[in-house]
Image 1 (cartoon, helix red, strand yellow):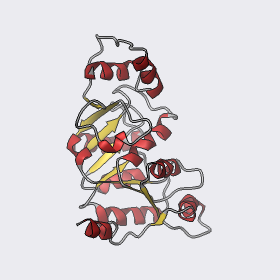
Image 2 (cartoon, rainbow, N blue to C red):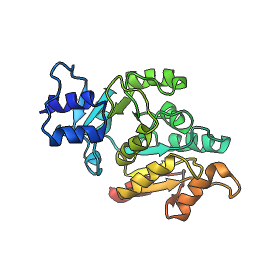
Image 3 (cartoon, rainbow, N blue to C red):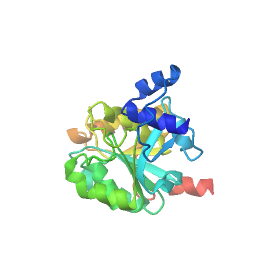
Image 4 (cartoon, rainbow, N blue to C red):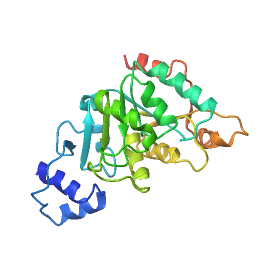
Length: 245
């Protein structure tokens, strides 16, 4: 059954709805499809945090250090076009938390790339197959992640990036961590979708506060106005860890 699930995911290019229909109809996949390295929802190693999702991925294709999925994660997201303030604050936060958390982000340019490049342990969640370096400007980062860190995707190896993949991908970024931090977001930013997914799961959302006249951060300010936690970079997470101990 496990290999059948992987083959169905490959056959239907990772499309959740198509895989669901195939399972309901007891469809048998093409047995000639070569198995790709993956975790399935049937595996004990499959992250419990992803089972909390309304639509947990049936299959997670991966390359790199899969043990990172068992570590304590923190999701950090933000705009592809960060300001100096956003860049500096992200570097500060990563420096503060890098020894205590595996950092999760989406491998986009901008805030995501800053997170992955500066983290000690990091997971990149893709909206395309693992054979594609998207965006191309992050090609060297992709190589580093494959060799030293972890890349995961619900899309098989050769699936090209599609615009509609990324909002759905964001639910995985939110689910993998108890806390999601939005470092910079305009009012229509995709990062707000990740924050929304985190809230649906009952996770904590933090946002960096911005000057009232800085449009590039108004999405963050709106999150705070709606009840998100105002980001306190210094000592982030230490108080909760002390209580847990």
